[in-house]
Structures are given as structure tokens and as C-alpha cells.
Amino acid sequence: MSVKKPSHEEEEFFAQVEEEKIKEQGDHAALRQAAQQAEQLRLAHWMHCPKCGNELTETRFRGMRIDQCGWCGGVYLDRAEFTKLAGHGEGVLHAVLGELLTPKG
Ligand SMILES: [Zn+2]
Image (tube, rainbow, N blue to C red; front, side, top):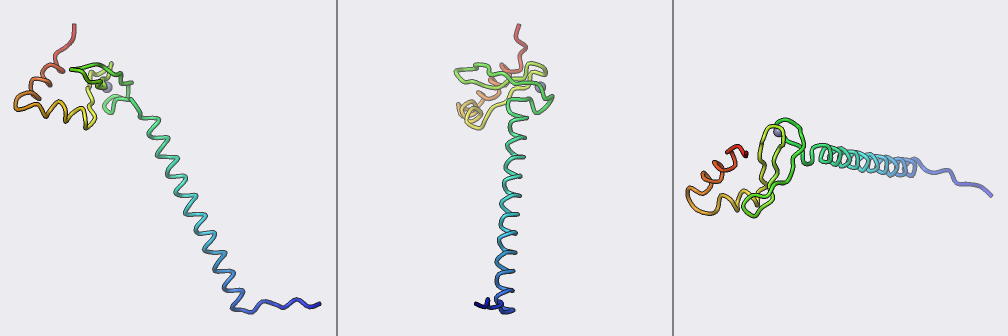
């Protein structure tokens, strides 16, 4: 029984298929690594003050839960919270900000 030697075209075809497979695996590995790094960053920064890096704690304010830094006093609102506060007519946002910036005794 003889084994037929692959033609040059067949060798090129299989080499190309193998090369594409390796590239695809590389792309998937790079995407997986990027996703892992993004998740690590998210976990490292979650509920930490972007200004000083200390922990944020949830505080109730006007029926909402907002995030406040216990160290520098920074207050952080997500988009929904900000929209809710700012959307109550002219002058309300100013009053809210003034209230937030007043030191609590
Ligand atoms: Zn802070």
C-alpha cells in the first residue's frame, strides 16, 4: 500500500488553514485578555472615589441612593440620579448642589 504524497497546492492549502486557525486563536486570546483586564480594572475601581481613591459609601439623599466619599466628601451621581435631580425645574439643581455641599454636623 502506498501513501500518496500531498501536492504542493494541498500543502499550501493546509498551511493556510493552520495559519488562519492560529491567528483566530490568537485573536480570541487577545480578546479574552482584554476582557479580563477590563474586569480587573472595574473591580479595582468599583465604589472608589475617582478623586482620592478612598471608598465610596451609599448615602440616602432625597429618596435616592448616591455615592459619597468619606474622605474628601466628593459626591457621585450616576446618569439616572443626576437626571432625576436636575430635571425638577430651574433653580432646583442649584439648591440641591448647595444642600449637598453644606457640611453635615
Ligand atoms: Zn475622595
